[in-house]
Length: 459
Image (tube, rainbow, N blue to C red; front, side, top):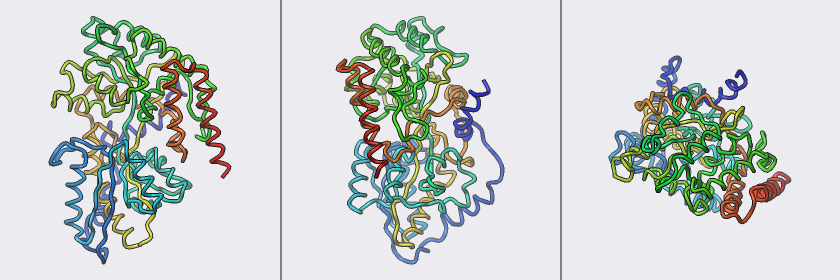
């Protein structure tokens, strides 16, 4: 038990910012931040234009003119420009599925944006490795103690901070309790500890399936959300990367073969929704919202997606969310995945422009701003002074359990994470289409990925 508790310390530390209002030692830092982050209109000395790109992360932000992604940012940009007349912000909202291609092309053409808001834990190190990212530790030097240290680790390399985290989106499992209740199976919902063993999960999902309802959904249309499905294998004791995130080791775990074989069997039995090889993560979300899926892994933002859908009619009003730990084998501590969104800055050669970028980033990461975007999606804020408790007691109860679990190593600290990530889903497709056995697909994935990593590391 002591080992289990220690393994969850990092995640509990990250989540505690949202679970309780912390106190102490920030008032002086906040005054300093306000004086240097928002005051001094026009103090850059010349007119400066900042290119700011963002993926559509935050919706339904309180105070924004509309619930759509990007609207809150546009509102805050107007406020910033009013305070800093010499600084102009060119804002672009980049679709998720186009962001990395668009940013990569811009960087390769020496035409990178100045500031990007994106999944910094997954993409930042790629640009740090290539020397394209600007170290920005001085942006938060006076308020660093207010930031979650576990999140800062994700944006730090060789002692230098290259990004500023804003929110953490934990990923775990969700039940649609309404489907269990409708079939008289409410007693199967693990309300006491919010945990299922693999055997309990299989039994429950088999019993709830039928008449247009599926126990769960898989997706392998692309790499997006792959870590959510991999949590099924982590719960059985498998690991995808080694501890240093320099090698793929998933093929070395018999549990991975067993877990994938079980999923194929569940697909054959009608427990898994049909067509997973061509299903994307958000397709599965839509099935869940339509009251057709009893369980799925996803991020904490699912609470907001479901509730927003009840308002606009895209969610069946009967859907009832219940958050729980990832199902696991006996004796295995389940692990959860996460995504950290935040700011990165590309290389700056003009000191005055860099100072303008610094002012803008500091403005956007003020505690009240981080709190606003965190609450919009039930995210974990990166700053202690932006902490809050969840209004929904069900979310709070789920987070009380999930926060004690360790984070899975999904390889995000590798500068080649994005390249290797794309190598897994074709193998998963082959498994689901029965073109390869789980064992063969795992071997092929590991060989391709490790050959690639070895070549990169030789350079």
